[in-house]
Amino acid sequence: MKDVINEMHDYDKKRDASSKIRGFIFQDLLAIEKLISGQHEYLLSEWIEDVCYIDKKNIHIIQVKYYPKTSPKYDEIYKELYYDYLLCELENIQASLYLAIHKKTPVTKQKYQDVKNAIEGKKIIETTEQSKIVKEEIWAKGEAEGASVKIEAVQEATRTTEEVAGTIEDTVEVKIEKKEIDKINIKDQLKKIEDKWERIKYVIEILGSENKIKKFYCAYQVEYKEEITKYREQVSDVLYEYFKDKIGEIDLDEEEIKDILLGTALLYIQEGYDNDRGFSTRARNKKELEEKTLKLFVVDNSVIISQMWMYVYASVNEIYSELEEDASIEEDILKRYKQLFESTLIYLKKLFDNDEGRHKFLLTITNSRTINFNDVDLKKEIKLLIENKNNFKCYILNCWKILMNIKCYNFGQYIDENIQEYIAFNLPNEVENIIIMGYQIPGSESRSVSNVFRKIHECKKRPSKWYYRGKHRGLKSYTWDATDIVSGDEEQAIDKISTEERFYIECLECIKTDEQMGDLEECNKCIFGKRCKIDGGEKGLW
Image: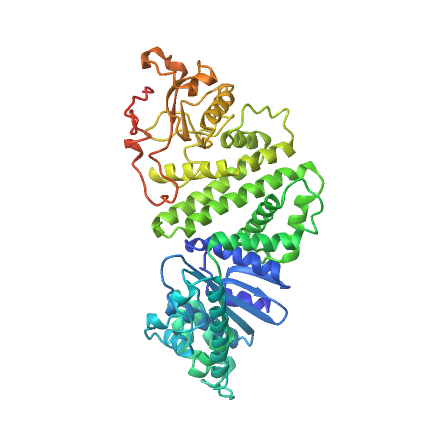
């Protein structure tokens, strides 16, 4: 079967995971779930279809769709799946086909006529989208009643499939003579057709028939999935249940272990997208994932760094998946955030390749007081990271939003690598040497600022600006005491603060992140300006 799968991939070699913007993480989560839940020989993403997995006799082909606000394009969905079905039939491969989908209202298998109309290019009436099995208002009535209706919907879909199966003609269809010669010609022609939809049209015209549409209808299934946030939790649970008895005792709680497991699995799946690799290196299998995962849980300090990286990897994926879920973010903006997401992982991975980079990262994203890494072992480092997870998420969102505002889609583009103690940015139209951080802890803002001040005060080259979300803002001096920074008594004339010791705290009130990542701001009129947009005060750094 491997040779056939390779040949089918040759027809669609231009498939590329990067072309999928909304639903990218959703697809990876589904791949993880399928890989862990079954006994498959191997699984591939973006190979023939979004996800496919193979056992000894069958190929399972899954088209993955994520619609937080739009309606499915069923004509495209069913034409693609029908095309896959016909190619498998041409190769005498038994195929199971699935539509794994999320949209605002649950989706069940449609009526045969709707699917047939979609394949034939006829209009599907919106009111029949759910095949009149499930009405949207019924789903909204409550969990108990909704569950009952869902059961009825599945039963009705099963009855519909059985009815269609009963009408399939039990005859061998021979559309063209000299079948073997035609098979070769068809495959040669497919390799010549560049446009995907032209290939699909060609295959349906040459190999399709009403009887085959019926067979396809009986062969495909619909899997409705929850929104990304909930689905992520479900997949984390699946991973934890599979590995919890294999990893033994470890000084981490259940949720922390889940994050490490998910980060490991996501990285393993995403490494398979490299289009320069052949089948043998792109194929994923459960045994290999298990080996990679269990190496992270041996009783050895050397693996803690890998655990930390998996935790960070999972967290950055989680942040981006939440943007995917935000229906208010337009596709072109989400596409840019995906570039920032990918470049962030590349940059952070370089930091984790050595102790200095990892310490630089931890100093930047934590609200802790002075950190003497000579006295901090790896177990304390991972605890420090976990304790600051929310602050890290805020840090990433702050960075992404500011970079998005200035049309920079490479996370590391403006980072000053000459600064070794923290992650420093030199942004255009802004003063040199700024540090972007997370948030001042609500209810403990003064303590947060004081702690960070003590930590930064010990750096050899201190930042001229802090981007630090919270209530404290304004011009400060590194000559002051930590308590003076937040006491409210530190207001002084700018000319009385030494130029060399000045720094300014940007509160980031004018840079919105909470459910407003799609609304861009003009940094030149706020954080890059010479005066504070909120209180009108002069920043005194120019």
